[in-house]
Image (tube, rainbow, N blue to C red; front, side, top):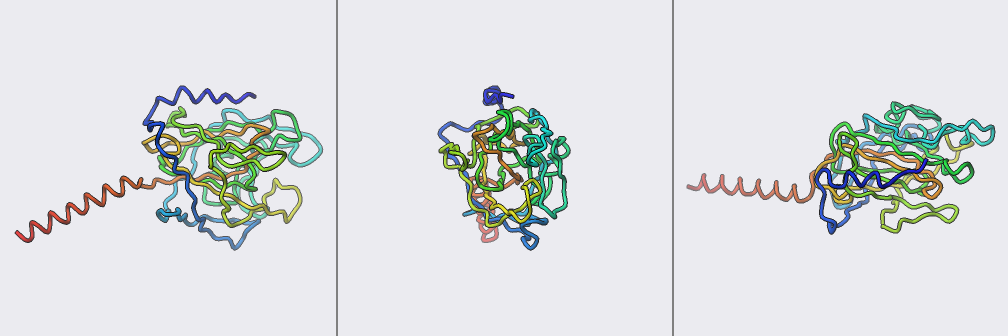
Length: 282
């Protein structure tokens, strides 16, 4: 499978596209969750505190997926990962959720469509198998249109390709490579979209053996990163083997007012208060 990034070109003129000079606004955030069952059990997301931004509690989860391409399932007799496809549904060793080596679209939704941070999509790195290992292209759609998306990546050692899509799956805006590969020479897109330490570990069933927790990274993106000025319906997610090193990730969305919108609302509110006072004084 050869992933064709030029598939995105046709959608660049669709929807609201920002000027090329618009600054990127990738941001850090604090993950607030119940970590009492970490790293093996359920880790339920409670809220997100955006750095220099709001406390977010109203999330929009993935409720639909389209698997455009995913590596075939391998049935080798060696390591456990030899019998898995590129993207698979994974979960903590003792967590509730879905485990599927050859996931259906419903399995992808099961992994991403909830607030359990120990339900993830696991991707093979492609380093030790055929050149096709670790390639996928999957569209995911949120319950409602969103203005921010929050990513977590197990291991903090992989890259994930991301692009906004509309309700019909047409790509819009910028193609982004987030994260950084840190093994076997690694791959660094060099764009500053690197993982922050999220402050917790998870240990999932795909990891061979027990008691092998890995640190989780996080990163937030908003509309200006995607180069659009309208809330987005979903994301096209891409992995390219072996350079991306197999991203193992969770993604959640939220509709958060843009700073300019908030400022505008405050100005309108202030004007209404002032007008009311003038009326009362008259």
